[in-house]
Length: 110
Figure: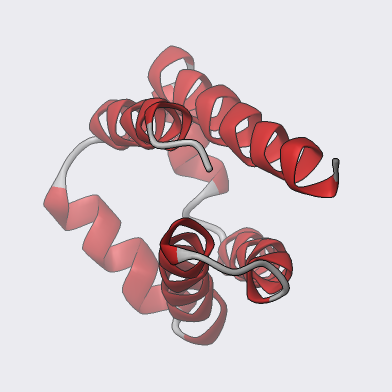
């Protein structure tokens, strides 16, 4: 039961975050250019990665690797994360990637 709640929470979080990036790119840019906010998001991603260590299988280990790497980068190097995001693509593209991640998680569900 815990895996199901966790799974749907992460999928919903990715999906809502992606929609927010698409619907409000200027506001998202302002928030996600703040080092404290980026570091907080990194900490949240690291916390979300922890339950994956309790469950076995490629799905949760892969999810752990993705969440932990993304969280560690944002938490440990927020300025680099901000700079890379701003130079790579617009916020709405990141929103599309987040939604694609949610869809992929749903399609490959454990």
